[in-house]
Image 1 (cartoon, helix red, strand yellow):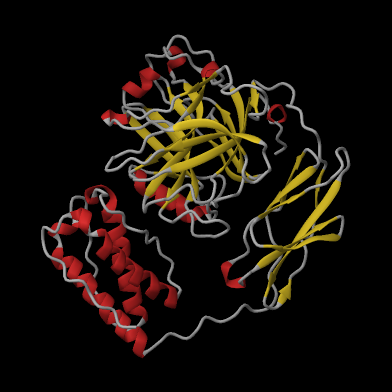
Image 2 (cartoon, one colour):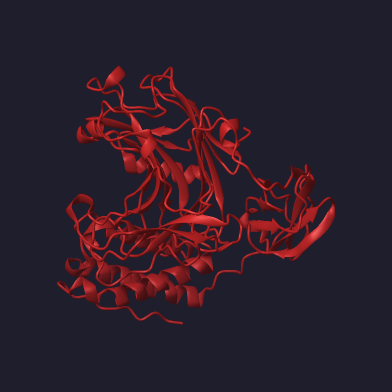
Length: 499
């Protein structure tokens, strides 16, 4: 169907432009789908401030226009958009994009691409199968098969027998099991050609009523009579960086998936036209009391600490914008170090895709390590090309993009994730250590500095608080993250983890 371009006029107010921007963006999405071109094209929102992050979206639109044109044998010269180049003052470049979209569509209609080939043979064996025991149940999770295999469902087997033939997601809860009894599980994938082979090695799991591991510093699964826990500080703030507005909310809710029981829910409220969304952090008071001399936590010189966190994003309760970051687990610098310019080390979801249930178009999970001196921070973003390297450069954004490209694992809604972190805390590159697992898969393993060097603090290094929270950057919208478990300890066993 022909595309009718919009005629843009300079100084059109931005709040009125979302309809036409979405018209163009939706046309580009349609063209990209025909040619199987991956993209990060979002939905525009009226009232959003174009000067903050629209350059990312506009450059992505230019990339898609260019790749479609090249695929169809047409020519197109991309415009490079920069900060402050807002749509009302760029009618020339917007009209250029509109006209190219029309030309691309006309050629696609006249010379449609061949339909994509179907999968060759049955799917390969699924990877990353893990089994997490619960009270009379076992939760299975696994990685998605390659897109080219066009998997439409998975088969779950217990002790060699079929359990379910129609699992369309990447997790499954086997219920009605006997506590104390060991069970074995395998899975296989299905496409139009049939089922592939089962996983070669079965995973074993023994359901249990559940007790906290021994020797931990801290353990909570949010069950019990009271909330919030006595030694947690719930900071549902709405005043970040001088902005004001409605704060987030922190409550205890029942897990919508029925896996974790009671969970801690951190929700950000709608924040129109803000540079930063409001956060809903939950900090462990036991780790750091606020003054640099009152530190009483677990990252003294060469101190070894393990952290284990379970989290999920409910479907339909998070909308990501292109280029946005959502911080979720953080090791925050002490007040003294932060005042000098040092940022925190943290995990984040980074990308530009809508969060979808069971889909693959989602943000990527990344870890950012902040070290060096507070006045001149050094960032290392994981994963690197392999588990023993990370990206480290003066361009933080480039590091994040490189880590995103290497990660190969997207964040999905309605799926519980378990992350484990192992630190040896030190400002020295030869003493510190960092390891990171997601659902039992090692993502980073490095000997490196893990703390800032800060001569004004005891031992010449910074100290960190620890918290789980929901904080989004450059976004208008709401967001909910649920946490089902937080454990800290001196060993892997003390947090219930076996590397």
